[in-house]
Amino acid sequence: MPRRNVTPEQDAYSEDDSDAYYDPYDQYDEGFEQEYADDRSRQGEPLVRQALDWGISGSILAILVLTALYAFLPIDAIPDFIPFAGQADDIGAILAGGGSVTFLTVLRYVLRTRIGRWGCLIAIVLAAIGAFTVFWALLRFFDAVL
Image 1: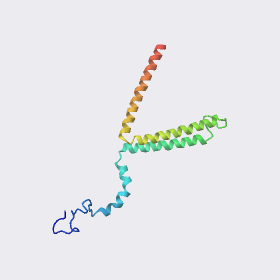
Image 2: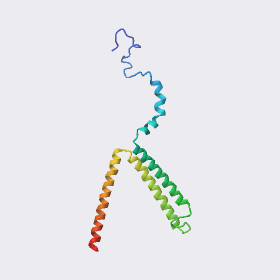
Image 3: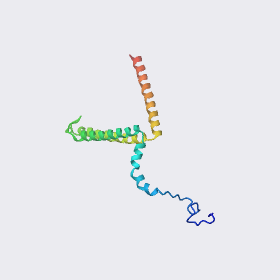
Image 4: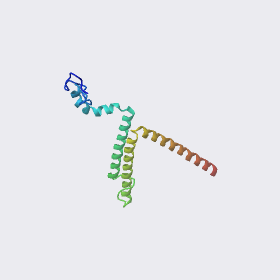
């Protein structure tokens, strides 16, 4: 309901633009938000997450370079002049490098979430318990045999 003795142009609280908000400084902030959005998002990240991203990116680059070197250089574990076996070890190296890059890429995005970090921690603890159990069982088995 409009107020008395006030024209709609003068009424800041009229019903026509009740959702509108006038900010006289809004025109100065338009370019600032877009220009510095990436910088502010990186500054807000914890140092550990930035180090993790750099570490994983460096690992991916190193794996790609080493895989390419192994595949294209003539010095291999199995020389390339041996039929089938020479090419098979190159294909195995390329598949292993590709699998490692895929794993690290997925790991980067999983570790960005809190649930992913807790999931990784739980998986590591369960793997450690499993490894300890297998080691203990093998130790008991070899004690019984010897």
